[in-house]
Image (cartoon, rainbow, N blue to C red; front, side, top):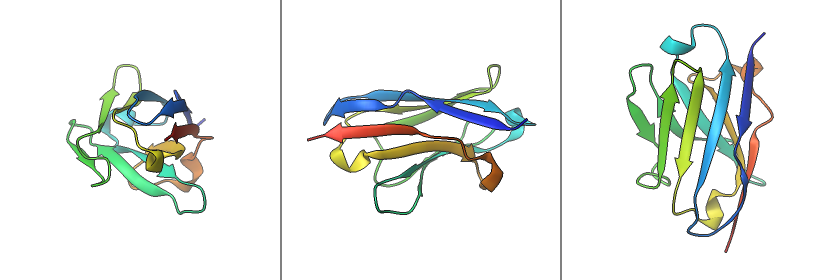
Amino acid sequence: QVQLVESGGGLVQAGGSLRLSCAASIGFFTITTMSWYRQAPGKQRELVATITSGGTTNYADSVKGRFTISRDNGKNMVYLQMNSLKPEDTGVYYCNRNPIRRDYWGQGTQVTVSS
């Protein structure tokens, strides 16, 4: 059964940090490019960060230099370290493969950054 479970969100003040985790029960995880996405209130879901099976990373300009994506293939986990958080980082964060599989979406984890 395919399952992606995100955790680690919360309420934090601007300038603070959070580490998100994604437990992935999907086939061929070790060779799958994974990404973090987020959806802010009233906005469309957007791509935040991507990591290939080989560890190559890519980031949205808005988070470059502040967020770090990583993965542990032995544990089928993907992480997002978020530093220097800003109020505009507020939203629900999801992990999914890249390209997206619509049937992979989990519940997400809420991140709220107060000013």
